[in-house]
Image (cartoon, rainbow, N blue to C red):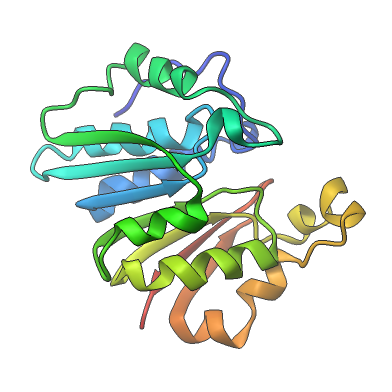
Length: 202
């Protein structure tokens, strides 16, 4: 079982201990290539990396893609997340290479071949439109049968202040769209901020 040093690491996932779900998902599915779009300080990333560390029989790679300092809203430096990995002894794993990539997630998809990603996590100030835009680019990169996780999906998450103020498209409307239901089997874990777990079916 994992034991992580999380003091000082801010994340909306932390309040309801959703890190346990990230760990369990990566541990059970044994992904060979995991990509996280939007890592911030590394709360979800550290739980995923701990599972990849514990999957000793699986050679894997973990790519963390974020703008870090270049992101105009809540952000941290890349050095912050690297140090969080280092203090948890997850930076240099013998069977899992972790790569920190400073790039726009809406451009980084060009670096990946189709059907090469086994686990994809999206946390980019999600709203329904940004998720659709993101998956327009990344859907084909995920293996059929691969796992997609994204922040949000509950009614409570769709009603947070900035979603209302800026009239953002709800995440639920995206998750209930014909396109998404045609391509994914999904369930949303409700504790705030909520987390949608989906399996790609085509």
